[in-house]
Length: 349
Image (cartoon, rainbow, N blue to C red; front, side, top):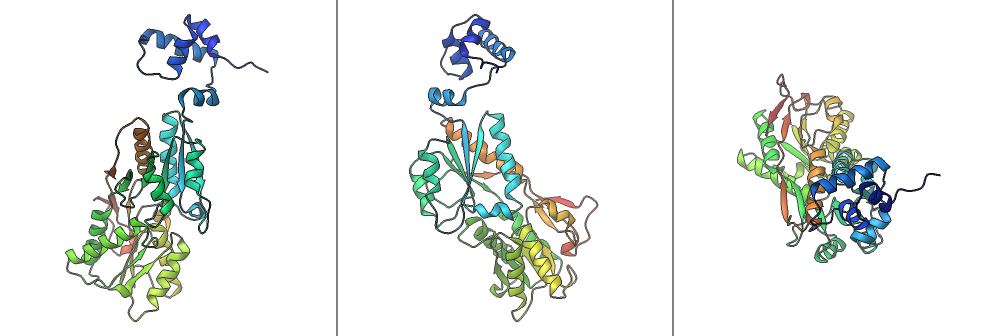
C-alpha cells in the first residue's frame, strides 16, 4: 500500500518549512510568502501526488469545504425536471472552488429539523435552499440565526440572502403574445401552491399582463398544480369541468404544461386548434412534446451557478442580500401556441 504524501514530504522536496507548506496549501491570507516560493511548493505537491486530507484541513481551517443543498420538497427529484440542471450548475461552481456538494432531500409532511441537523453538525459551511416557502418557520429561524444560507427564490424575509429569477417581465410578454394571437379567455395553472412565492409571483405577473392589454382575468380559468406532470393534468381537467373552457393556457412551467396537454388530448381537444398552450423554463422535453411546446428558456444551469457563487461570497464575508438573476431569457415560439414559428424559433425577452 502506497504511503500518503505528507506536508513534511513536500517541505523537503521544496526546500521550505512545514509551516510554509501549510500556509500555501491552505491559502492562508496575510503571509509574506513570495509567488516564487508558492509556485515551488505547489509544484512539489503536484509532483509527489499530494491529496489533501479533508479531515485535517477541516480542523485547521474550521471549514468542511462542503456546500449544502436542501430540497425543501425532496420528492421533486422523482418527477421535476428543473431541479437536476439547477443542481448541476451548483455542483460545477463547487468543483471550481474545491468544494463538495451535500444534498439533503426532505420528504413532505412531519419531519425532523433538517436545517439545524446540517448546520449544527458542522458538516457544511453554507446552505442553499431550493423550493423554500413562506410558511416554513424552521427556515425563518435559520435565516435569523445568521448561518450562511442562500435561498433560491425569496420568502421576503428582511434578513434573507436570496437569488431570484427575474421572470415577471417574461410572463407579461407571454401573456401579451397570447392575446395578440386573438385569445381572450386565457387560463393559468400555477406550478405549485401559492405559499411558494415563485408560483404566486408568476400568477401575479400573468394578471398584470392581462391588465396591460386590457384583457379580462377570470378566476374560474385558474388552477393550482403541485410541481408534477400529474398535478398539471388534474388541474387542467378541473378547469375543463367548469362552465366555460379557455381558448389558451399559460402553464406555470413546462412540467405543468405537459400534463395539461395530456388532459386536453384525453378530453378530445386539440392543441393548439382548440386550446393554445404556453409553458415556461424550456426543459429538454419541450422541444420534443407533441405538439412542440412554446416556452421561455430560463437557463437553469446558470441560475444554479449564481446561487452557488452567492454562497461562496457569503463565506468570504461579502454581502449578498436579495439579488435577481440577471440572465437573458429567450421566448421559444413553437407549435403549441398556434403561432407560426420563426426560422430561429426564438426571441429575446
